[in-house]
Length: 313
Ligand SMILES: Nc1nc2c(ncn2[C@@H]2O[C@H](COP(=O)(O)OP(=O)(O)OP(=O)(O)O)[C@@H](O)[C@H]2O)c(=O)[nH]1
Ligand SMILES: [Mg+2]
Image (cartoon, rainbow, N blue to C red; front, side, top):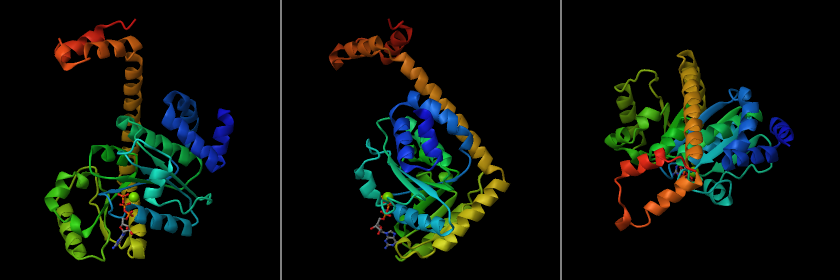
């Protein structure tokens, strides 16, 4: 059963890939043997994260990047991660991202993922889904995720390289600093450069980036694009390639892969500890002790200690 699924994944059978991803989303225990078997193949593809504010043009750019990749006779897996949505795989996200233009093309696999109510595990699951796509032989993996808060930052760390997409109106430099975008971006794209202010924003951004050197990270280049007209895409794609080479030369890709490995182990340990901790009796005890606010008799620390000390029988 598992062997035939793995065989299907390695054979790039999209139905098997889909099934494997569903297992990862549903139950970590069932996923373990699968992930263990395919892990050695996980370093094959280049994993690129595409993030940025809602409506900036992430999906549009993702689509033109897919076209570029296909032109080069390469293959691609696309994972649209929406931390705000509890749903996954369904048509809701699929419609929203409008990336279902390759349904029968075996060179392109597209899948959306929601949080399933478990934001903490989403970053790890994104990596695991990447491993499945890697085992299927995809040359590139694109992660699209809408970016505003911390959870996307975690998801972006599932990638080797992160592209932050802005629009000319994103011009408030203070906000960019605040949003931590500079920290996560390896490469900036000012999309919708058909609008006023695009050049102003890109030179302002270059200035900021030049003065914001960070150990362990190269200065991010800035590209202007018009996604809908495919303007600036060749330069962007070449820029991605040369930035990846520079990151490799500087040892940054290895650093990131190592950090991802650590985060994954941490997340698995955390999950395992919590799962074994919350026995039915502990869940019930907490529920009974917190039926209404008037009835609370212990400070939170004492309640937590009581649970931790409870043998859970
Ligand atoms: N004028 C202009 N419109 C663009 C450009 N790129 C994308 N758009 C339009 O902007 C809108 C949003 O584009 P999407 O690619 O869906 O943006 P997104 O960032 O994926 O959006 P979410 O996933 O909803 O956050 C669409 O109507 C696109 O056609 C561009 O370069 N110029
Ligand atoms: Mg989108």
